[in-house]
Image (tube, rainbow, N blue to C red; front, side, top):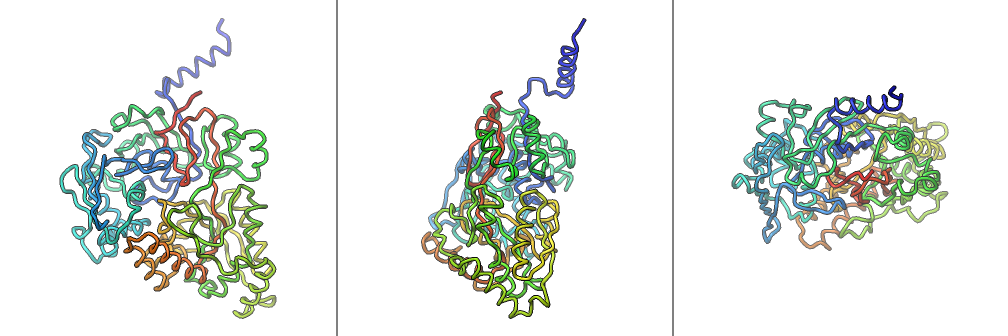
Length: 526
């Protein structure tokens, strides 16, 4: 007689064989939010980047520590004036269908993301390329764009201004090549599982909306022999408590974040699997400066003064975050971080008193309270912060009615400026202050959630962009940041720490300041 245990084991064996998973190394990742898209030109979230960066590789890419290493390009050279970069693609680098990856694919991709027809949210990130802004605004042709294929393996990129951060920027999905031969044939359907071809370590195998995205190892990837994980599942788990339960039940091997309410328990019981590290990120509140009442700087400053950042960081979240009185995080290279909110050294009571005075000057008070909706991302820690902020604002006679939304819906609201006040966060795409400060430029498009537009700010950022001297460049950006902080289109709350759940048997995972962890560098030692 066969025992029930043996019968059950045999059933599991048959299931694994039927799914093609027997003998495969399968990695389960909690990814926070359901992706809007896996098209590199239409994505805008870190949760999408986590998947896209496994499927595609740019001219440069990141290693496990997030340092820049060669990607599709095996090497590159830079002109003396810092304006012309010439990239040499890897010999034999192919798409997952075997078609060679060419310099023309990169030209096609950069023209596509910058085309006005694409309406890419992230297009403004690429305005450092010569004529990119004019092309994106319909004022120049594709032929004017400073991107050229010199031959199938040689790509030239010409810049508007020197950009020493370009190799880092090229690790970002907005700069990735896409397969011209597939996109021209399939149009927007090219991103579907079974249709998409990619040039990274993995290929898209399956996408079940609101359930999982499954990717499988790309045998044609140039470094396939060093990719240890055969299959990766990404799960959109927004609730931190649910993610923790699934992690403890061994249903996921890695998760983005965990609830701060469980911090003490995790430190006592799972100290080796709860990972904390500083990251180049800022959490802030965006104020729609084009919408009443935030079209008045006095109102914006009053709300900013009323928020007790120390209480939020040290008592509400308690995860090592630093209270923020500026926008650019302290870890950013070649930046002195001298810009600061002018009331940073005041006592909290002094701030409240001045906030009430400013609101009274505008006409608000106990007889005429200010009321508006405060949208926040629906994760549990975001709710705790939103509730605390709402309570702080009541002390100055302001009623912020909190409203939870899924992260992707919430960010769509911010990008279209269909909100009044909303929580937001920014994780660096590359290690440079410009990556934070460009978000407030008048030409930043949908990435400028606040609608802030100050010619003096834009002028300083433009001059900084054309300055080779790193010290002078930083000084100009500090001046710009100070102008913005004085006008308060946003409210910095705190600088970030990364919170991750990582199984002890996951090898190759490294804490890094941009919190990018590509599956190709990890392995499972169970």
